[in-house]
Length: 216
Image 1 (tube, rainbow, N blue to C red):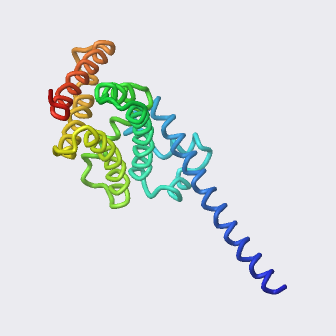
Image 2: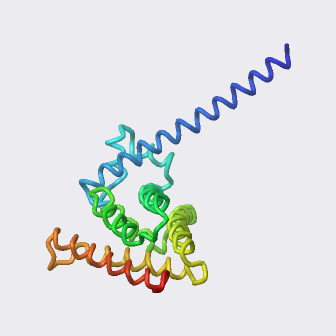
Image 3: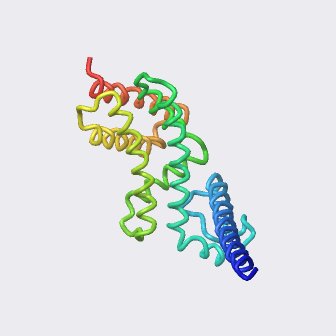
């Protein structure tokens, strides 16, 4: 009987610990959801912990129980945005045996044209060039980018494993994201013209890399 009671106490303790972990993750999700919602109204670099806390219904100080600082919160949002993008890319890649880089490229462009993801594109730029990130934040950002890179490397390698697909994947991502950042709000373009030019560039870029991966 004593052994049974002891086992029950251990099980209860484990269940309580699991519940605490789940509760913590749920609260983190609420905070991230609130931040993403606010980003559609306020530029991410203008958002404060007070903005987010007010939307969640907690104090700004309470947010620091879940995120060490604002950069840490931004990194988690960046990773979530990257996961949404990865899902779209994988859906295209896994649903067809043909080389559809143009379709993948246009999906990436469309992703960052969404109101929410537009802010995440700016955040991506901020995080990738910020040399003051702490080790935790840098780890989240690096791993998230690495997942995207690996997916593109695997895709290129499927069609031509005999070339330096890792280098090509890096060049492809840098070229596409760099163009979106540079020309998305180019002063001489209205919004419709900017979208047209981005997609025109995307098609051209896809053709250039396809010629490297699948030479005629």
